[in-house]
Image (cartoon, rainbow, N blue to C red):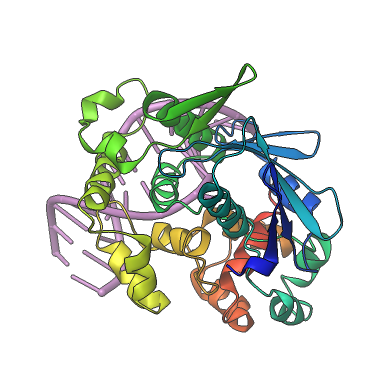
Length: 305
DNA sequence: TTCCAGGGTAACG
DNA sequence: CGTTACCATGGA
């Protein structure tokens, strides 16, 4: 991340956003889950605690000027190297590196996307920069409705994660692989997760503690298909979860969770059908999305919430 | 009561 | 290789 993209003002950071960026659209996306536990939104501002090594800065993100987001530290500002990591995290979270102009050009003439890019102009794929969190969230969300998935995530975070307090408010941080690696399925009693999901989460934690799965390894594969294969080898990760992680964490623009029920329902809704499209039909409808499947999926999801 | 949720595995043919 | 039972809970 180049230095001219952001400004370090010690107590706050200024992140200069691209033209195709609308803070409110991203805020609307982030507001869709009332049960979210890893950040909160109040008066158009996002509050979140981050974990940078042993530091846990709490930040407030707002859009005070048209061309820059302000990241303000609650409490004492952390050291320079932490401020830099925070800028990096927020930059990644909002996907500010991607030039989405080509996506808009393609989408303008697309049967399914033209309305989406008009309605949600400036929306970015809000990511999950932490790989362990992204994989766990994918596993948790398998085959259950989204509100319940958020409930399970909250229980997992509040049972095994960390909490930092400031000014009487609590800010939760997602557990690390180390926090889960020595657990057994019995430790998850009361969370109401399936036994298999517990096994999957512990298994992924083990892999990451052993250094057998890192973001760098997935990036180093070079292409989407190799990264997908690497993920699918892991117990509990199938095609949907792999592509979901590659989309929201590794930010492969052509990651495509084609088995996603939300995507199916969005297409059904847009086409005014009473049944969900077949996989063959989705492949036909998405033929022009090549290279932008992740953004297309993310924009279509917005019709559902 | 039944069916569907941001699926995946294991055990079959 | 394709198909199927099963997981486990909540909401419509």
